[in-house]
Image (tube, rainbow, N blue to C red; front, side):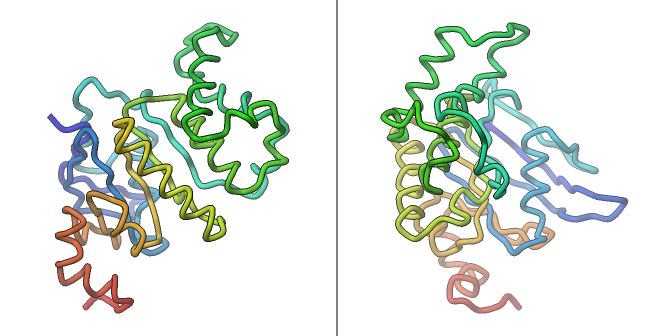
Length: 236
């Protein structure tokens, strides 16, 4: 059974369908990129995958023992969040909250998890630094470590390169690929960057308030819709 399977799902707000015709599956080890213009339904679908919004029709099922509590999530970062008054380690530790249950304090295990993920993203040396003093790229690395501290199964990344300079953007793409390829973590990434998605991801899901395409990256490149969008053209 797939990690996540979406069958004939649609989502509505105030009685109006914002995205529908969703039918796709995410397998263990996949790297799926969800692409589409603003307002195409990407964020609504992410809420559905996180269990924050129920589909108005259709179903979303989890397989292989995966639950919504085991999904690491990196949301879009707002400017106000960049000034968070905490150390890098404290930020990453907060990603282990789901594993604490009703215990009010972090245990040694949670600290070890947080430090391991900081090493994974190359931020261990800055573990005691103030989060607000980091560069944009360093902050995203720390937040990626926080998402990893919540899971070793599935990451959902919502525009993880938004606002980053080209050097930090390339660095983040390399890091996400490393986590997927070498650590076996399944990745679902929302992106506006079609060109980069076509290079990085294994599968593409293209939305325009409905599912326009789902398949491998190679199939997308060779499809009519993929050729149109990757060349900068408009769909028919």
